[in-house]
Length: 118
Image 1 (tube, rainbow, N blue to C red):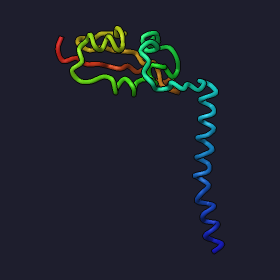
Image 2 (image 1 turned 45 degrees about the vertical axis):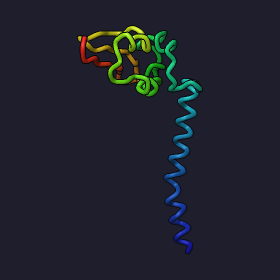
Image 3 (image 1 turned 135 degrees about the vertical axis):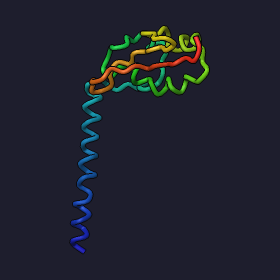
Image 4 (image 1 turned 180 degrees about the vertical axis):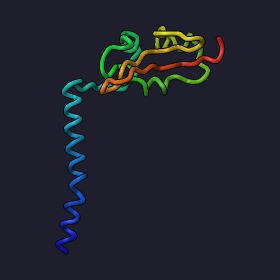
C-alpha cells in the first residue's frame, strides 16, 4: 500500500511541474505585454491603424482568428477592403496584409486573400 502512495506522488510531479511552468509563463507574458481584455477580438479601427510590422506580438496577429470568421468565400474586393482596409501589398489577384510577428518574434507572417477573378 505504501508503494502505491509513493508511485502516485511520483506520477503527480510532472503535472505539478507543468502547472507551475504554465503559471510562470503566463505571468511572464502578461508582465511584458500586459493583459488585454480585447485580445483576439477583431477591431477594424485597430487593424487599419496598426502598421503591418508593429508590435510583438502584433495586434493584427492576435485578431487573425476573428478575421477568419468574418471572411467568406465569394467576397468582393470592395467588401474585403471595407473590412480590412487597403492591403499592404498586391501581387496579381492576391491581397497581402502584414501580420507582423508572433511571440517570440522570429518569422514575419501575412494574411493572404486570393481572389478568383479580376
